[in-house]
Image 1 (tube, helix red, strand yellow):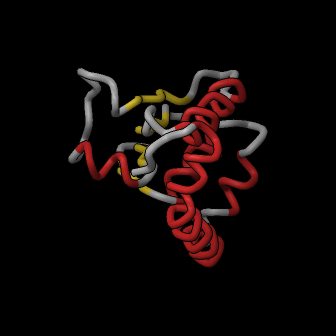
Image 2: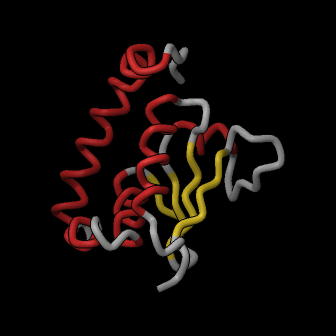
Length: 119
């Protein structure tokens, strides 16, 4: 299985918690996590775009939103079944709808979780 690269917002308290959990679950080291807020981090596209949504690279294909989460889940044995379900276009559409809903709530949730200003 090829490595998955995840670009995440290390300035977001929600993202930090999510990524910390994914790191703990990634026992096989199949995911490279890149905090795009760190100086010198390599970004495949505009940094601001990377900060607005989760992005991933799986088998050289750049993914964002629910598709990026699904790629991350496929790399983690415990979550792999959910990631495989997301290969279905109908399931991915449902997950993307939920992700877009989450993004609308994200600034408020950031303030609740860690006092973040919200992006």
